[in-house]
Image 1: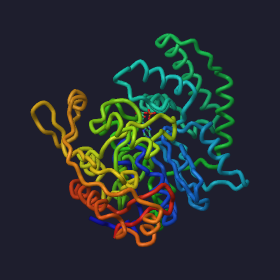
Image 2 (image 1 turned 60 degrees about the horizontal axis):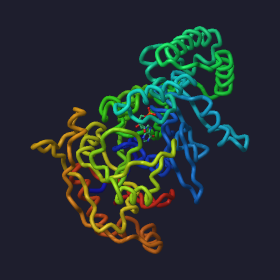
Image 3 (image 1 turned 45 degrees about the horizontal axis):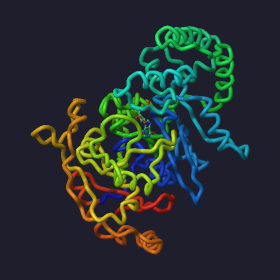
Image 4 (image 1 turned 180 degrees about the horizontal axis):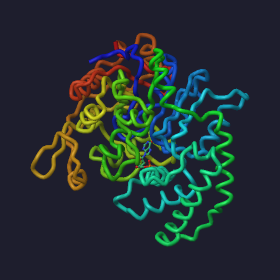
Length: 437
Ligand code: IMP
């Protein structure tokens, strides 16, 4: 079932579930072996947590490679960027006066305060059809992009063009908010414009042509890690629509989100949490309600990195994972947080769904089916809670020192998904990631 992460030049990390699978940690683990870490979609709806020597780093916009100051980190055109949030993150990392080795795509779209306002209103209006968004303005910014009224990073650098576009967009949003949503608008047009001109000037040294640089890097044999945000089930085409995010989160999105051809990617690692968590609304077939769900949440500290919301927890869903392997073309999986399951006597894993009188093995598109299907579980034997000594042995001897039932659990998942496992994470720390031989 194993497959070591190879020496491939272009490796992509994607979430195979609902986001929060631990991608940041896997990226941080692999980052020393690459020259570039590149994000290609989403914005500050993402929250990546990386723990280094007991210090917790929470990232929302900057690629996870930022914790290695010499790495080139890149934000692709497929992202939506709130410049105020980005500048705060930059200030956080540039305390010692050293500039980050960062490139921001001139073509990435910009989030404005009216996007944030609209995000909450639209999601609330939708009620049970809402996604329970992070309220960061992600959806409305992508909507403007699709409608071709969006403002890009490059526009902030050209005051005349910015003014032309901003005047139109602001009036459109003001009217929509006032007339459609009946909101009294207190947004100050001039203040926002001036602030964004300033943001643009501060970001200017980092702005450039991402596609050009990434393609040149690949041509000259550099190693690149592409960092996905959110997860497969949140993909706006292939996920649990309409309870999705507004971008494509799957591996294919890297082509449009950076500007590289599909032939350039060598390896695609799907990050899979050893159980399941979901933050936001909509049906989650394998959600464990009640005491077991609470147990997983507390043990796994499943609270949103971005919003602090409690995550809904449950069990691995093989219908979703098989789908994720197919949609992303996974070459291997990285299993995270498997230590959290220690001490459970039995671990349920959903192998298929039952809907009315039939069984379903492929992810349904019909919301009616998703709402009412029931998971069919197979119960696998658990293993004991690992002690500090056990962890020390595991970190010293690697994969072979893992409890045999834990290895059986992973083998079952790998066999069912027909995809090998390359990495296993048994703790929050950077060093607690082990390669599968
Ligand atoms: P949005 O991306 O803020 O529009 O939120 C849409 C849906 O995606 C909501 O259900 C969010 O909770 C979820 N979501 C967005 N980003 C993340 C993430 O990074 N991790 C987990 N869930 C996310």
